[in-house]
Length: 341
Image (cartoon, rainbow, N blue to C red; front, side):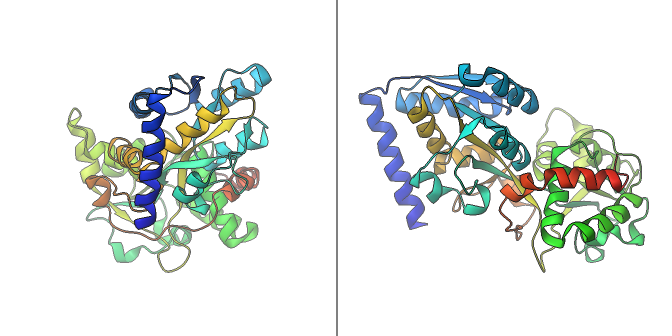
């Protein structure tokens, strides 16, 4: 905690000092995060540093293709996207450059950043098992691996294999168990699907609440947003029927992933892009992320939102998330062989 406070004070002094002598060069950001989920932080950075930030939002894959097409002519200085799989794709595509920063390394645990510094996690998302209260007893659950057992036949809802979140989850299984065991698991898991995969994470939760399945696999922030939704009673009621179970607590831990960012290869304002990246992992920024996005702070010592906190404390898989990107292609082919549509 003392280390985190010192880190916060040093960076806060850096940004406050920058207001007196405005650094030259605005920062251009390409973001796969929706505007409402990042712009307030960018505005706060501008207010504290005097550095203007221009924001372009879009779909993650489309923005990556745009960066590739623009090449050295891109105006983008910072690329923000979701999932370690996509961050690895950006690194592999050659559109990022390493950012050497003691502040970033101090704030972001090693498991949640690229070993070579090409990207850093900004927020943490978990993908546990969610079950229908009254239809599943928590003591019946144990691990992701156990969901391939016959007792879960036609009881599981999950989105399709084209979803990067599922690809990364399977990649984590390969990292933990090896490809042969992961494929054996995937075949048993797919055989237990209650219906052909369709829709997003919210749809899996709604389907379970509606009686179409007993278990849903989804990221926790979807459940949190549904529980906090004051404009949709049906969505909130569906979420209230579900409970969270943290799998693999006796061994590797629950699967987690990140949203993250990296400085673009041809950034014209590299120094200010680094300052912005460091700002996004400050405790105050992390606290805002946690409350608004309903994700977990990537930095230690920062509290999550009260709704997310109600899901309980858990042990997270400690695998370096760069491995999920490296194993993405193997995971996709494995899912195809297992019949996961």
